[in-house]
Figure (spheres, rainbow, N blue to C red):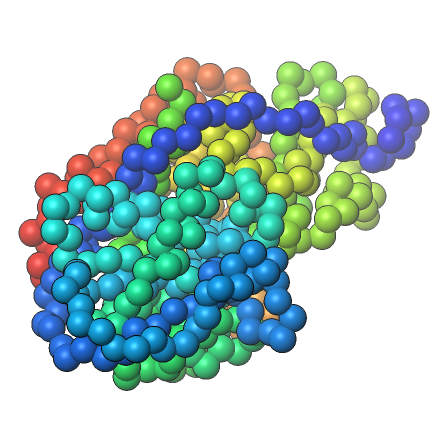
Length: 452
């Protein structure tokens, strides 16, 4: 509140983040991997076509906004007809309209695949997308660049024959057929009717629960992003032959400068800095999946803690609790000097790799997914003090990391006063993203794809 002895830190909402331009160039990617997977599978006899509602996340008698806009699309077979076009189809089902990690990752694959198809005179496969795995977020949809929204509608209208379709279920296994919650099932008509069914998923803890193990074992393949996940999935009982590492791309054109430990980072920040320091903490929250009154939650957190207000006043904290459109994210990263995420676990850590691609020095927990790309040269890996048990929710009984708050406090001050070193780590971070997760690298190593 004020400076007259009150313990509440100044919580503010910043002005709009500057917008940067959008490029439809490939996201990074793994289109070739999926292409050769499709090629390696032989032709099968023709069967019926199918069509589905555009980007429908839930099965409900009450139509959603997207169903209202495109009522002419129906999920029903159409008459068989002679087909002379591309024989194979990839049906990618993911939360394309929802935002979040699965959504942005799925979009990166789709943009890469679509870019590849358009460059081929006679492509071996066609592409279709379907909303699945989460509720629609209208703000996220409207925040997508117009080119992506047009592409989504275009790709949704692709017709596919079931027995020549490779289905990718890009979500948590609870959404797979039959879903444990209200969502469009993946695969749409159950198992056995499609050519191949692939599950793309990840978890942030040290194991996979028994129900998810059972669901993963129904898939023909299970794609995970890191060696950490390969090990935890296999150790949990998922068929080792089915589990494959397929890294997550980062868009080096879009992000180009030319669960998450919030309480931890707030407490450490307020302990280390005061109003006299030339520093500010910006907290970006996802209002779609979290409490919209986030600023007051932070105030309550500080009031309930044993933090003492510094003589020079609290260091400022800014809460960005509105929706940030995808096209605005590069501007958000460019406005910062460092990125901090002391989370207990990450499937992949997409905001981390996006920040690294934007030349930002990152401080983040050195456990789970990020161990795939964090080094002492390209970041400030935050050590783990120990493992703690998840007390509630779907991962109850699993273990995740407890990051070192003492080390976090030291690193935040260190980054603030060692600008040259931090800048060097940011430059190395982007270089590593280019060397390890770019389309050019995957094209040069395409021989590995044939072994899949």
